[in-house]
Image (cartoon, rainbow, N blue to C red):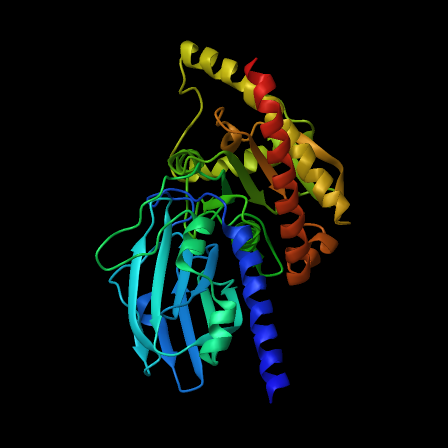
Length: 418
């Protein structure tokens, strides 16, 4: 029996180590609590804590996925769960069983939300996972624990001072809040699922472009958040119409550092296929780019909005000056995304980097690109666009490429200011 206990202790220690490594990935500086970039809501009716004599379960239902980390503290046994970042809403989670003595919910100055559970008995983690519903974009964090001896628990747990040193934030106590200097914010990616509402986009074989790109945007958001480098916002979370100008305003409201518009269009002629990344250009790089730019801009005409000719000469001059800085960054972003897709072995268009007069790319204060993930008018592309495995591969490729571009862009920032 002694060998069995040692094995359990070793397994528990390994699990805590894995969770610590996962936490390190999430422990990048978070956005402020009020940010649109990563704010999620706790869905209280679907969240609960339950305990039995041998097991403890914690289920957190959220309006969107978020980075999270957890720690175990000894003397007395406690579970600490941090999420970046969550509006706790009405407060305490519903619970059953006698496994929890007390729970405390609050927010840290760096934007992370913290939950502290005082455990009635020592438990160690068995599994921890976050799943996202592709239909709604909602997430569920499921934490599962098993009852252990106090000795096993204390072997795996850490001290309160160690937690504070690692997270840079104090525990939430009933008589005091947390205090810590707020770290620098993480860069924000604004994902823009094209079309929506009265503008369904392209349609083939019962599939609407607006639905397809929204589903993919949710997958890409989850991958980016899981990697822990960026915060992520979406211009729309459901099948609603958002004007082109409204998409740019949403990006600025979220303090976005870059803008990525997602599409999967169809062409009336030819058999264009593969992924294309577009940057803004006064003139389209070819007839297909001109057609797509016109097709995307028709969304604003549907809403009675005309963006043409609404800037005066002074504004145009100021925009031109700003664009001198942003244009090469956008071009580098497009090239990095194409390189990432190619390295992943995914199909690229024969001319994978192009330009077009896309209104949605006209924000001169942030690098912006439009990605045609594929063309629904091509049977091979359409099959890929409907394939969950392809979604996963493409999301991983784009996420890695965005991170690589961001690191290169930071390195060049000092040179641009000289």
